[in-house]
Image 1 (cartoon, rainbow, N blue to C red):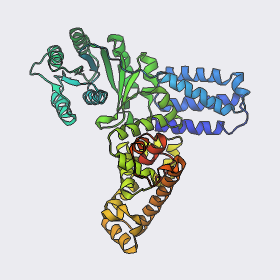
Image 2 (cartoon, helix red, strand yellow):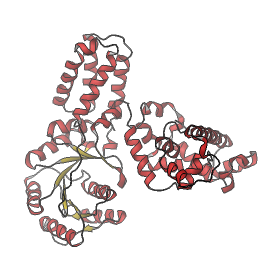
Image 3 (spheres, helix red, strand yellow):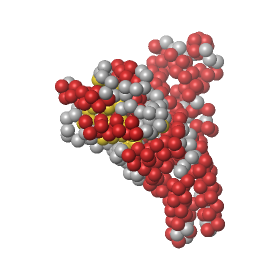
Image 4 (cartoon, rainbow, N blue to C red):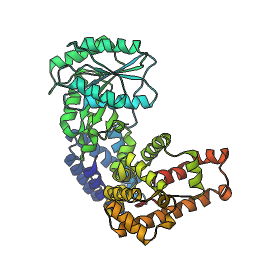
Length: 470
């Protein structure tokens, strides 16, 4: 998301930050370029004008022009204003103590509302809630079946009814949640191809019947300014609480996200960045603004790694063994699998400062190459993965044939593995040599689980781990 805009802005700022002084003409030229970049990203014209004026006034201040690094000061101003444009601060969805909490999802047909309902239920379940999905879209063919299939796939209960009255279905769904002791009800309401009175009257009647704690509108980010126009119309006729941007991963421009908050006055609460159930993320304006400007989003990267850590793929004995510097190809393979769960090399690169440029410049960040690395490791015997020193010429030839690659690819992987192994031993030395050679007791296991950033780097291939490409 925001790929084109990010590249344009980073190019503009690269020329500013290399200058020792900035004059008014330099600022005006940069503002014209930023204005053009925003308009090409399909940002609302009125929003662009207001944004440029705010940035220009602040950039022409004496504090900036007299600064030792005026270019960096301008970048900071643009970062702050982009954050403000995206909503300023994170707007988390607040659930009450009511049993059950009721959440209505509204929006036009084709916006991704049904899929967003399932993703939201999955996210809430991860947070300890017991959600129920209610299929209240009785007009779109197969809408009820689609929600039912998603519910079965995620093991989340779905309430449906033969009734043709969406209000009755929504009301009965809430009653069913009470009977089943489920604490969150997510109602997938019906949409239309365009806004009409019948749809607005229907969602208003559902709202009156079930008194929802939250009304979230789902908009398709790929429709650009049409999404902004639709959201503005809904905001005028139905007082919803926040927005879910669907298909944000498929919109390289990002105009809807940069316009919708200022136009509607409603915060973006979630963004969908993929097809899988775990791709609905809470929307953090400051983190998105940093991604746009190529500053990375290391906090999100750490959170993704922490979620994987909770999956328990690494045992305490594994962690203690790694801390003793005993690194095997099985560990290397686990790192590859973990990175794939985090969205692949490309997704991780986007979250690193300068990651986009690194992705372009480095062949190591090619997902296809990572797949080849995995194939090579899987072609090894158990002994070869545990004891890499036995990999002589004949073994390497056999492994290459089994993986369908050249022997040079196997040699390259072994070299990368050796580099990672050396890094692991260096990290172990930095953490203290007291654990080396000792049988891991409770303290060792505890420390292995809680080594913080250093341990996570080794597990997930984060910067500094020696994983290929970083």
